[in-house]
Each structure stands twice: as C-alpha cells, then as structure tokens.
Amino acid sequence: MMTGLDLDSLILEAKSLKFELRSPAHVLAVEINDHRLAIEGGGQRSRVIPNILHLLDHLDEYRAEANFYITSGQLKIFPEVATLVNSRGHEIGLCHDLSALSCSAEIDELKYELETAIGRKVEGILIKGRNRAWRNILRKLADAEFQYCLIDFVPAAPFPSGITLCTFESGRSIAVLPPSQSRFAGVPVIFGSEGRIRLFPLWYLRRCIRRTGRPGDPAVMSFPLWEFDPHLPRRLIDPIRAVKHYGNLTVAEFKLKRLLAEFDFATIPKLLSQAKTAD
Image (tube, rainbow, N blue to C red; front, top):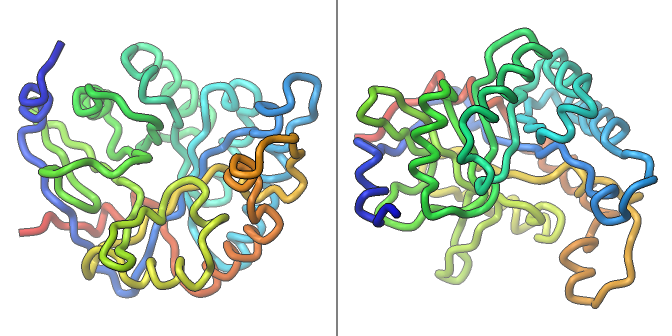
C-alpha cells in the first residue's frame, strides 16, 4: 500500500492556473444521470432525454456553453445524448466513480466508445468520490491522454487551491478542477458541488461567483441533471433527508436561469487554451 509521501511523489509538479480572458467566464459541469430510475427501481420511464433537451434550450437562450459528463450506464442506454450535446457545441466527457477507476482498460474502452459516438477526441472526465490513491489515478488518466478531470472534493493542503496543472515524470500533464469554494464569516464553504445551486440562496451564489479565490480564477460549479427536474418523484423519507434530496427542486431551474443571464460560462477546453501557470 502506498504511503501519503509516495502519493505526493507521483506528481512531479503541481501549479495553479491563472486565466487571462477578455471577460470573466466560469464553468458549468453537468453529470448526465437518471435519479428517477435510481430511487424508484425498474419499470419507470427515463427522464434523461426531456431533461437534457430542456437544459440545452436554456443554454441556447442565454448563449452559454456547458460541460456534460455521461456515465457508462447512460452511454450504453442513450449514446445519442452524447451526439446531441456535442452537436450543440458543448463539451462532452466521461463520468466515472473514483473507486472504479483502477481498471485502466475499462476507461480506455469507454473513452473509445464515446469518441466513436461524437467523432472527436474526448478531453475530460468527471470523477466522483474519494480514494486515497486518487493522485495515482490522476497519473493513469494523464497517460490515457485526458487533458483535464473534475473532482467533487477540494484537495487538502499542500495541494494548490483552484484549478491546478499536474505534471508527472512521464512528461504528461492533466488539469484538475475541484468545486469552487468561498468564505462565509471566515469559514470556507463549497458552493460548486452537487446540491448547492438547488439549496443555496440565489444572492449567496451570486456573491460566491463574484468572489472566487483570486482574480482570473473561474468558478467551477457541478450538478447532476436530475436536480433541475421539478417532476422528480418523491419518496416518503425523514425530513432532513427529504430536504437534501428534494429541497428547492421547484425553484432550481429559475435560479439556474438567473445565473445564466448574469454570468458567462464557457467550455473547459476553451478556458484551458487561454490559461497560464501562476508564478
């Protein structure tokens, strides 16, 4: 088993990225999944197609660019979703659980399958969950020629904050994008991960996006597709869990539209093409 020092030594160099853009641009990352089937079991009609079409229409209305990540299950069921997203000018990549990324052959197969569907190279992946060997997995992703990956947690120090470029001894590198965080009453609060757009007040989200870590540091906001489905069926569960799973489902779409109207959002490859490493 690798020690913490061994994991740190896997990364030869890790530098924060800064961005020089004509106008500030931020990141919307959407996980393409089907929570309705997950909570209700089999026999339910999928909501992926209507939800993705509805979200794409909102993006077109506000001339915004988003980044979509499709799970292996959805890629096998709805390969046309990847083609649709790509044809509308948005970024499309893979979504995979961190605990299942030990098999590089499986990732290569899924990457090839998605590339065949969209007719171009796949540059990014969204990895979910925590794993002590996640930096070793970063190296594997870089060797698989992924240009960037999103993670759903904020790495602990001394890993640089914000968007980071990690370079390995092989010479390959990969950009790491954690969810964005801000400070409230001196306490760091993650506002860019699952549930935050839906549950946090709109005024607070606006404040956080305007006050990201430092100038030239775009906000990275990730959310699953089902969070903007007001017709998601409810189960009878305890009140605390009910708020976590279903809270603000009816107003989440409204809040997203207000953010799209107020802020600019771009694809991650476009941002990375204009990025420089911080001194």
